[in-house]
Length: 413
Image (cartoon, rainbow, N blue to C red; front, side, top):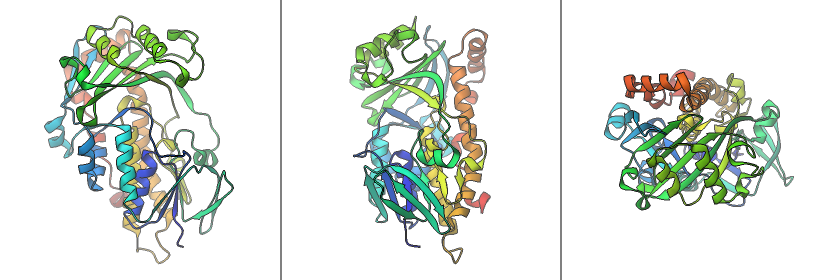
């Protein structure tokens, strides 16, 4: 067959998948429902596991041109400002894992992957195209778009996010799960911050039923600020503010957030008040992946949030999508030319699902657990603070995570 592999979704995961396949010589048709490529949100963190993948793809120079590389992660008490624990990054994390810890604006990472995909001659990028349904056939996949156009491909990758249509057809239309948490996100120019808050570190402020994290992005020129509070849209900390968070004013967001913070320390208040504009999202996810069948079936596979949406409390959402894409690329490289009938997409996706599902499920579980620990009160909060004081870096480091991703070729082929 000469048809492309079809990729539904042009976010970070979809572009990473398109690039990973194209660099192995596989033609790709990527379908993005928006009229223009873009990314929403603000910053994200990339542990050494994700940076390792970008390095293997030859994208490290592009990352270094737009990212920041913090010196450490600090956990502080949101009320007292007390330092609870720290994890050294910089040279220490590079020496431990071979790659640095990076922080980057989502738009910059998206643009990096978009330009990388565009350099590959086998990638066709199509905008304004939304998947309606698919049908798996003996020799490929028949894909129907909302425009009623029909495409044929060797295989289909659903990279279409939390509300994935590919997932709904594969696994059934199961509603997403509300976390009960709201995320306020904003950016502030570094030169508008007090010197004490402008240091190149990731700071996590922990308080009852809330936490705030901020870190440098865009080569240190800006700080990304994310505040997560527990509440329901239209109720609780902000009064009756309606159901569409994007329609609310910055003043309403700032007022609601300041009330939710309660008796915050001066440094945290200064950081919050420095943000010129807030955007607000409710955080939703799905239960952890329960087995390989939730990652792939036949010639159809799910990647990133379509397969394993994450709460943001382990800072691994983008990293896991990038790992997924790298795994598929590695499996294709290992199988190309091995069978007279071609790559054998069902075998590739079976190996991909076996390799990825347990790791992604573990990250989902740890992320949810971290949310409980970050927002703890009472005895759990006291126990958390004692553990951070006694164990320090051993508790905050994640060797099982940062030493990845696992190589699927040795374990699955």
